[in-house]
Amino acid sequence: MFKVFLYAILIILGVLISVLEGWVPPLGGLHAWEAQVLVGALSGLAAALFITSLMGLLQRELSQEDGPRRLVQGALIGLVGALLSFAIAWGLALLFPQNPLVRAFQGMIVLAFTIGGFAVGQRVTLSWREKTPESSPPPTLVKLVDTSAIIDGRIGDLAKTGFIEGKIIIAEFVLSELQTIADSQDNLRRRKGRRGLDILGELRRSSEVQVEVLNKDYPNITDVDRKLIQLAKELNAKIITTDYNLNKVAKVEGVPVLNINELANAVKPRFIPGEEIEVEVIDRGEEINQGVGYLDDGTMVVVENGRRFIGKKIKAIVNSSLQTEAGKMLFVRPKVEPIKWEQQ
Image (cartoon, rainbow, N blue to C red; front, side):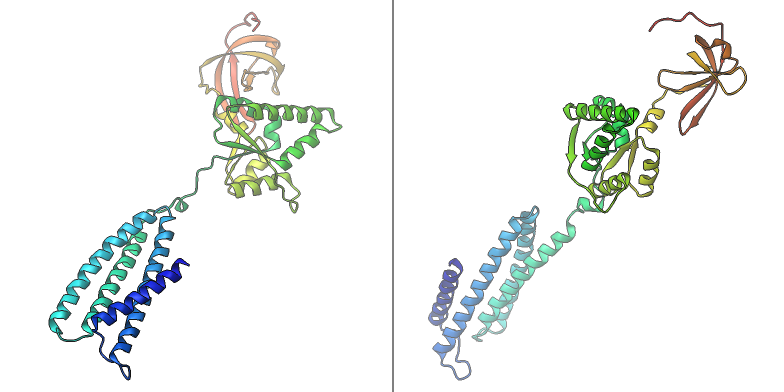
């Protein structure tokens, strides 16, 4: 309704101005007043189209994030175009002072240069716009947890320390697999599944991390690991796992993996040859007279000539260390006779 009213007002105004000014000469077979009415109506219509288009442009630009900046840029360059058009119009008036069509041509020049300058100003602004974050991948803060990491249990301790940031997502199909393990007829698997459910409950109650269960499945994919990799690709997420095979496959697929076993090995203390440690020998080794013990962090210690110390705690000197896929191994030799066992 507003547009109809605007069009009518501007057309009538254009006709009145054209008739009152009387600058339009007879055109073809039309009388002077007929030509004035026609030119005035067309001028009013053109002005109405321009105003409505400008209003639509302003509405679109203001709704965008950088719209106001682009409008200011376009307005400034449009002003430069208008000033240039006034100079050209002034020159035409000097060259053709008696030509009645010069005034119409001057108006067209002013309008064209102003609109053209505004359009050029917007294009220049667009070319100067800073690159959006789409040029670089967004940070990966979402973590997907697989069944092995939940059953393992250490993820709960990691969450408490604050080393895991962002949101932890438990996929519905992972939760279903965990429930299946908890309902297993095998006693060991059933205990592992129930422990995993307990760990998951602790995570959801924890205030250190945000845990969400995502109700999404892939009916066409039967393997849970493949489902997890597909979901990680869609969410741009990392996978937390202790599964060696999943770790390898996910890396081949380009999915980042946080392996809890690799983290545990990385934070184990480093020992250098000649350093003194204390270890309890608990079993015999593969070689003759070898003994085997473990440090508190699970590091396996092979004690040369340590079989006679089985069941005792001794001081030993580090000879060397070996890093394997299963973890780190230390090779030591006894320093002194067994020391008295102290209750921890």
